[in-house]
Image (tube, rainbow, N blue to C red):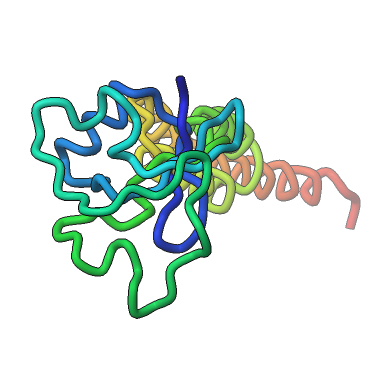
Length: 181
């Protein structure tokens, strides 16, 4: 079964299967009081009610809500997380449909850097370099090659620009010499 984690901000994170949620519990990223939502049914339960998450861990919950209901949302003074130490911020939970691990940014990096060799190397290659770095922050392990390519493309594109400018100046000089005065 898969469950969303309902974070303190009310947002849904995940989904995660029971082994994943069990690891999050071991990592203190969710507590026995953390609210989970069954992906298939939409039913919300406290994490301690899902078999397999807190096995071999002492239960510290004192009251059990009626099955199938969780009651009204807690107010700020009775928030479920206020006494839970070491809870990771919600951003540590993977969001459903969030990103693709940087794959799109890697592709954009390659394209920007390749086009940047021929046109606007500083702008396009810099965009390619930045895309590769951002992809790395999103978990991509394939960011090094496009990063290096972006740097090389920037240098090569800049050199090509200088060469083409000097060639153009030489061509114009020769053209002016051929013109009758």
